[in-house]
Image 1 (cartoon, rainbow, N blue to C red):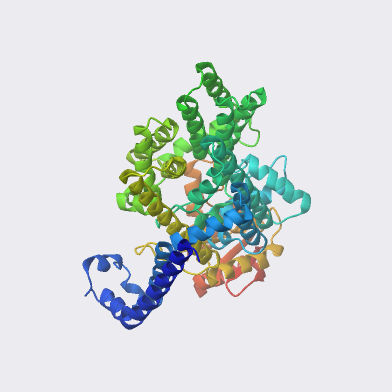
Image 2: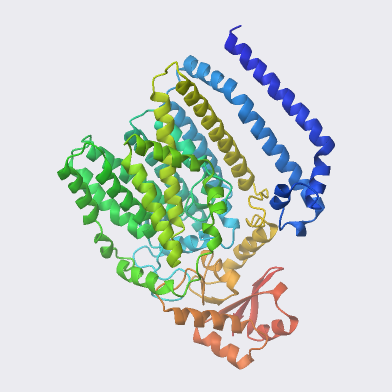
Length: 616
């Protein structure tokens, strides 16, 4: 028996013993600790962690506290104590099976793809968040698949186009129309296509930029799992969010951004000399801008910074890359499905009507919660600057932080996305630091010992967040409640109410003609067009209409469901918008108002919750 194997067994025995002792102590003292926290008798730091949760009750704390303490304790013990023996076992196994980084990346990608395939085929988590952009995308796919060449507004009975008539949805809608897929099946397919592009982009770019076979493996792990516990929004791409947003335009553009960066690296390093490379840069630029202007701006800025700061490149070659990217800036004006220039003007005009960004999102504590281990990329970036390496990574991080700050100062609605892009460059800095440490020759000195200690600590921390992100992803994928921020109640809509609403709308859809205008409550209006019919007002519909017209529609929609509205005024509002069906919620409608609404026509379909009335 080798000494290393003996040490591994000893470490495993210590870990098992520590878990057994810790479990025994927790069983004796755990509930007393939870009660002391709840009653405010424990340490101040523990009390602050529990602030704002008293409304849940002590019994809830027993359940949540047990789960979190056990999971986090086990995860920390396993990570810290098993990291070394598992690393030794992995190295021995890798040597035995001759595991190449390409095979390891392929295996990880296959597992990820299988997991997302299950989601696409059976239950997409994004469906059950009834306030998400998923429903806007589903309505777009439904409208576009039935009228691929001249689609109308997916929500409203208008001839105006939608902002979501983008290239990726054009492909998905075309496939849906050919194979008669539902919008939900089509979005599942679109999510798989986006995932494939994202994995390809990670592999190609990280391998080419870092010149390492192991870079894609580290890239996949760090980009998807080296995140903290913060309240992540649409556009963020850690594994626990990817299930909800994988079919979104932001992920499509992120994947294309990585592929575009790979092309730029190949051109700048003269590994791709064909003119097709420049042509591809010029074509990908408008595709990204049309699909998601914020992520498209990130891609363009990144490619330009790479062209400027990549070392050892001749000036004319840098200029050619910049010209190729710049030449594509005007091409979005040729997109036939909506006016790109008009879209920019509408975004500027809507800015003053949209609410300001919550400043709490920019608080240092919240930013650190989102960053998690990515914060270690900051010293890695400074170390790269000290070594005069990776000007691209350093400049990219600084530019994204600057844009984030400017957006916060002027309350630009989508400026929070630049935190995502800053994290992206920190992740790249982490990948570089790990590869740099592994490539450095060992030296028998104190500094070398300290470096190895830092490397093992970094690996252990990344392993901890890797396991934590996967655990939370499993919880959220299966619909189990996960309380990530104490002050924000768990709100993912994997609830019986969401299932019930979706089931009710599926049952009512056959009674609604394809182009019929339905007056529905606000919370139903954003869902209904994904099944059948058009509505009077919905978020995502009528993007190019004036803000005054949008506000008027919202006000009129509320008046119809108000008991204070006279029957004559209600009929006039319904005629104004050409409404032929009225949908209302029995549970939130008073008996008197329900009788008034039933006088407008005859019921043609209903469930325990919803009732559909065809107007006479």
